[in-house]
Image (cartoon, rainbow, N blue to C red; front, top):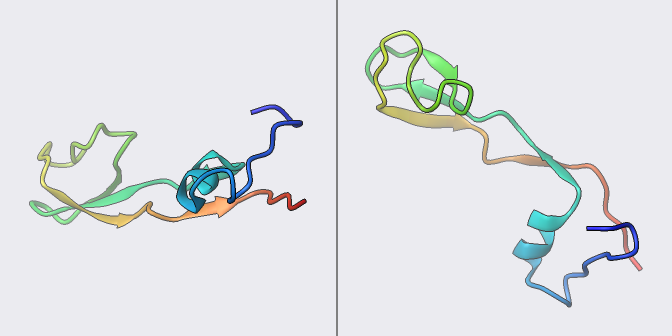
Length: 72
C-alpha cells in the first residue's frame, strides 16, 4: 500500500483494515504437550525442537503491535 492509499474503516471491515494497517506481529510461542518445552512455532516449523513432536498449544502470538494509525 502506498503512502497516498490509506484505508479507512468505512472502506473495509475493521478487521481487514487492521490486517492491512502498518503493524508488526509478535513471535508465536508454543508449548509442547509431550515434553513441556516452549519454542518458536514458525522458526521450528511447528515441530518441538526437543522431542520432535508436533502436539503443542499456543502460548503467545495472537497479539500484534500497531506501529502507526493515520486518521483523516
